[in-house]
Picture (cartoon, rainbow, N blue to C red):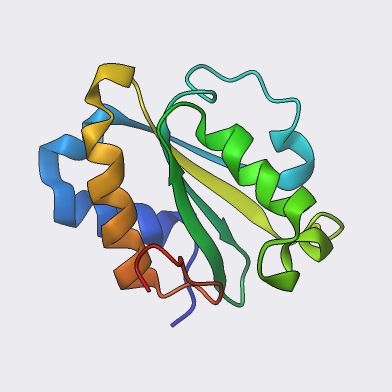
Length: 127
């Protein structure tokens, strides 16, 4: 099944109901992710690397989701992430909590997305 940010957000909204409103959704190219200054972009949250063909990686960070997501590129996680940096078709979807005190929802959201999206680079945490 091909997914995009809209279909991913619909799945999250259907699963989490009113809790979904606690998140700010930011869908951005990797190039723009480095310099974006959108409100909440540096908050705790879940990140999803995706393109039109697949969901590549899902993860979370309890302080700064954007920072952690971009670290996967420099670390070349799964031996594939570094190549994404030059791919204009790969996006970074951030679902960050508006209130950092609500970070417990981040863990729940990551588990949900990891199991429902089945990224090609699986989390070692969820095995």
